[in-house]
Image (tube, rainbow, N blue to C red; front, side, top):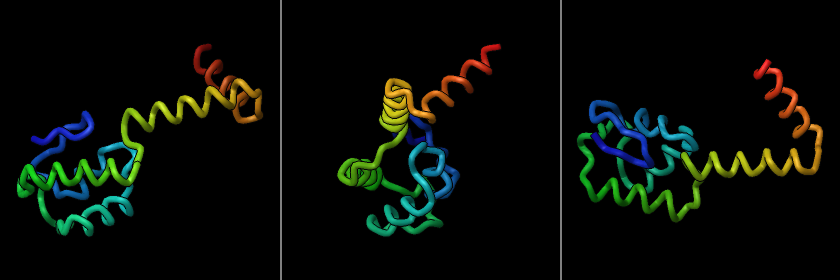
Length: 102
């Protein structure tokens, strides 16, 4: 089992299937990352060495891709800004949130 950004990736799964579990990564990004690291899409997580996993993390960091916690913080700050400026989207979010509480 490999842990990346707080998500545990199953060793039995293929690389692109396992990476789809990480919030912020879509299939297009996963294919680009695998091409840059010369990893086949049919390769399994258990076949990857520790050095490939480190290269994967460094590549995500250099591309400034928001994943997991950073992505959630960014979305939360965007919603907060919309509410503060009282835009239509911000007010709609408040109404939707209050309807769930009833």
